[in-house]
Image (tube, rainbow, N blue to C red; front, side, top):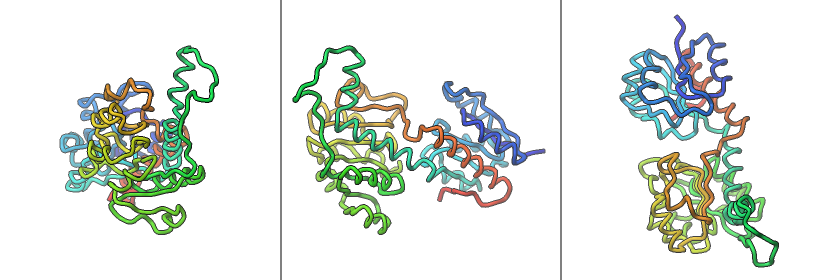
Length: 324
């Protein structure tokens, strides 16, 4: 009997085709592209007896999930770079390999981060809303004024692949680069970018734009809290394309309300898809629905990489991109 791989949520069909070509059965969760995620009970029933699962952010992989899958589970292939939805320790204790999809979404996410920087600093979201709502407008020297980026400093929190790719794009616009992180970044990347490393509290105080690219861990949850936001200048902007809980959204809403910073741009949220009500109605906040990797090419590459990882592990081979 062929080993079975579960795909609880909708995924690009090329992934299932790759698995079938590898001689594997596919258990599909029956989700359409616009459907809500498969409910938890349905996911647990679907993964029973599977050798592999292609998970997404809506799939919480914990002891209950692993119990439901049973002892035959060999691989959890997460279709994302981040894997905060997966209890990697619990998987490791049971001999289950965890993989992710780094690299293939770097450029798409960096493009999105730069777009958010431009939208926030040039007030493009506010300007676009005015046109769409039919509000009367005319050209004027003092109207719709934003902030230029040339000669400004971009602070990157987490100078990994996506952070570095974002910094390269910002450098092309004439920005200077600073970064904060748990360790020194790749020296070659630092030289290329002319970047300087700063402690986080100094970076927050010094930079015109702060862009978050760190993973979500217990240490980075609410990394940007009320104290951190108080370090930022009132003319500075915060951009988050990492994970929502890195930012304390209630503290961010309070800081914006008090005029403690000029604006924010978010693609991720603490409690997706819910957005803090103190942010949703503000013209100085750009809000996007977690579209950092949302290009056809990137999402297809993510799905195929996850499928290749699952097929490799089940075949007794080393996965392409293991976690840890």
